Length: 153
Image (cartoon, rainbow, N blue to C red; front, side, top):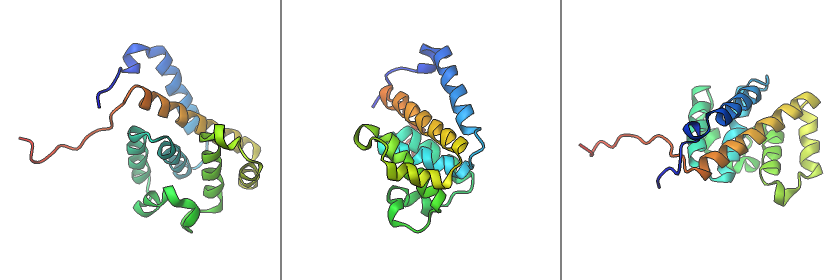
């Protein structure tokens, strides 16, 4: 796989706007660990290797456990996630797959029980932002950092 183009050099002002949106969404005051789970889960659904790589590393650096990251794709079957995280993950899935789910009332009600109105907006902004990033990375074929092979000399 080869990258198609570098959006930062092709349209720096546009990408600056995306970075500003990311700063706003990530600086919303919601828990760092929750936001990394949301970003990782949306990226898993979208199949964005670049973002999965980035956000699992960021989550680990912020103290997230390997076990919770490994089980994230099956969060509904694991007791490792809090009710607040479950509500955020359900909302993430509903909005990431919005053409199929149409944001069901049950997912909204679960989120509403765990998040204030302001937090609901902030969480939704984060979900929208990571989905936009996934589209940039997948569309332009961004490649995650590769480890150096020891046998390549």
